[in-house]
Amino acid sequence: MVSRVERGPVAEWFWTIDRLFLVTFVLLMGIGFMLSFAASPAVAERLGLDSFHFVKRHAAFMLPALGVMFGLSFLTPRQVRRTAIVILAVSLLMMVLALFFGIEVKGARRWVTLAGISIQPSEFMKPAFVVVCAWLFAEHARQPEIPGNFFAIILFGMVAALLIAQPDLGQTILTSVVWGGMFFMAGMPWLWIVLLGGLGGAGLVGAYLTLPHVAGRIDRFLTGEGDTFQVDTAREAIIRGDWFGQGPGEGMVKRIIPDSHTDFIFSVAAEEFGIVFCIVLVSIFAFLVLRGLNHAFKERNDFNRFAVAGLVLQIGVQSLINIGVNLELLPAKGMTLPLISYGGSSMIAICVTAGFILALTRRRPEKRAQERSLFRSVHGVPAE
Image (cartoon, rainbow, N blue to C red; front, top):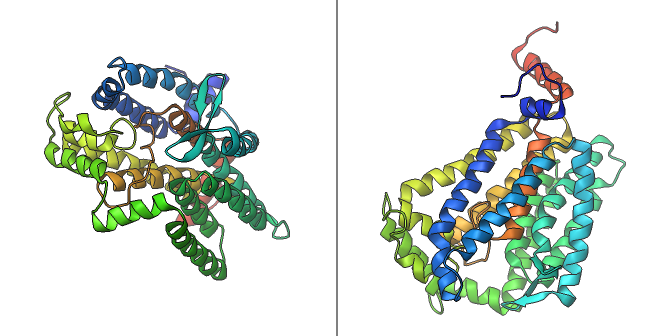
């Protein structure tokens, strides 16, 4: 145990970190590793690989992901901002390169290969984009003559254009919702709300009319006709799981779900561990989001407030989309369940998000003084 009287960097980190946040992130990673044993062997066997191929790779991804999360949690808010700028610049460059030299998977170019390792740059772009936009919004709030909001709009347009070019409509929607939520927090004028809302609606209509795979997924969702094998099988797995599941390793429907270890791991969890377990899992994500928004509400620093709210909103909306697809409440979309689904880029990128959240919510001396001042103003306690 680390003593409170110690003043080393590790001791300072231990006593200032939000330990409930830390436990939540580690718990989700542990649940994801457990579910990889249930979801991935059947997929590996269909591909002619060792049964535990994806389990081993999942474990291998966890080690650097944990290292990234813990390492970033030591940063100061200024260092978080600078790190995010570097990550954003590199990821945007790699997204451009992916359009020309990337690996094409199912008609989309979202991956690049470096030193034999496949990387999805858009996953790393997301947390960095949130932090940089939070800084731009905060600078405009601090000094209105600085065109921070305008630069944030330009940055969003660049990111959205690159995502649409891949194409990746799901990530575009996720990024748009998170960015819009942050802009709203920053005091978006009603004119902008109407304008951007109209542009968003027009964009969805345009995607439906110009992108055949988008139109196909929406049509299948609305009519139930066409190739709906994966979502139908996922629904069957959830129904078969009932309240308490079939038991670890006893799931049968999961064996024929093509993406059971990635996009449809929630259905595997439902079949083997039941609806009650899934409710607990959803509650963990809800706790993470609500705790983050509570931190943001108490935060006096605009940058910290916007960044923390945006980062937890990103995790929450991504989880909502993944679970909604599994429950057939949303059209099918390839999006992982944060820290649960298999995927190296996704796991490490979410741990970047987690590291930023932990760093920005640490109880630093100036932050504790602000919280005491806020408590006195709310409860009418006179200053000492």
